[in-house]
Length: 426
Image 1 (tube, helix red, strand yellow):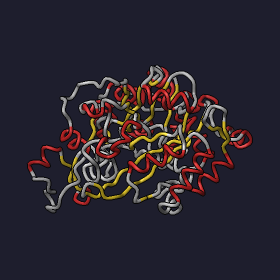
Image 2 (tube, one colour; image 1 turned 90 degrees about the vertical axis):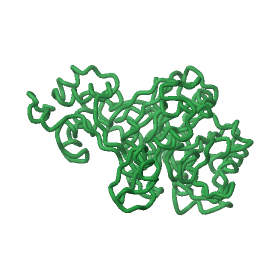
Image 3 (cartoon, helix red, strand yellow; image 1 turned 60 degrees about the vertical axis):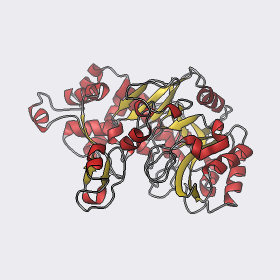
Image 4 (cartoon, helix red, strand yellow; image 1 turned 30 degrees about the vertical axis):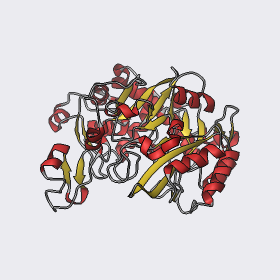
């Protein structure tokens, strides 16, 4: 079994960390427990040039960090987290265009099987628009035509519609999307075999739509910093190779085991709302307010929950024919922060996190597999109890809306105050 996080970004994308380079991705993939990482931004000339300098083919359609670089980076990885890391060439493309009398804004993730194919694809896109100013290029190119260019460029290339429910930039989004995948990709829809759930939806929500039965669900972090790797991921079994991943997704083989998911309420667009006015609205409230913000009277951003309800033709609980298990998790720093009663970005949380990496192993192993008694021995009862509650879904979430992440609450102030044992790592 291995985890793959296939959709990320590089330092060349807007609003991303300057630490997003091959070395940091190699290190953080091990800390997180991810074995296959998307390169991100493979359409950007500067990033592809850096990739060619630092990673090389590993003989399986994937890539590995060059030995001399890997040896230097490995010194900063605790022995308990050491693991194999492979890269797959991938990148997100933003298509903004008019179709059927409406402006469409659709993000797609493309995958290519070689540097040569990536260079050909890059050359084709460079003749269409600007691929230099942003790692995620914005092109006036129909998503259907983007897919056609990819298929003409690389016979083993494939495209996955990204975070398919995000209001502003997705195939089914409430603001710039379509009412079906078929409407977007037309005669080439048969070449789409997987869709990405995104942080604000999970497979259970997607299974409510018959039109999505033909696709498998995958999940990825869409990370804008190395530390966000693995917050969502896809779980595979068997051989680690480009061809194995391609086949597992296209044919829905047993090698596709499932996904690791955010709790969708924690995503930035789960509920409706208006961030400027701090208005968070359940879809029922939006209907009562006729789609307007109760504070300022302007239209709210309709979130994923409402959009799924609008297009669904099945009740909640129904499973798709290609359904796979999924596991909802909360990032480990947030659990530590809840136990400590501090912010997830605090130095204390960071210190505790790396102590856990050193003593217990990588994050996904800790969150999903490590016995609670082992966590308790190292981290104290509060963190162990936090992991237990996350595994069981026993937590409170103030749902995200209009670009604001949801807020997780695992413990009450009273529980922290009366805890018999304070968390200690020593």
